[in-house]
Length: 84
Image (tube, rainbow, N blue to C red; front, side):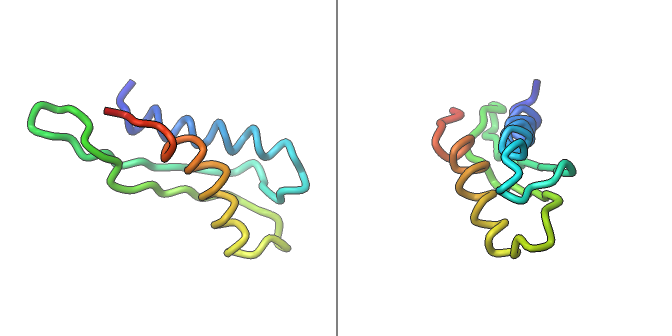
């Protein structure tokens, strides 16, 4: 499976796991997109961008949602690993 798709799947699977804790305010609808930069030999060099969207409870502020997604979904799944 191409690296960007595998990474995007990891993010949505982590979201699904976190969503089970109803106190976090995440709802079922989520999507992710990961863009990876490759060198001339088609080897991944870096993650260029990550887009993650999640339905959430109305009482969860945008800033709280951003913090939750960054810390619990992105950093713990992608930023902590090397993909070279």
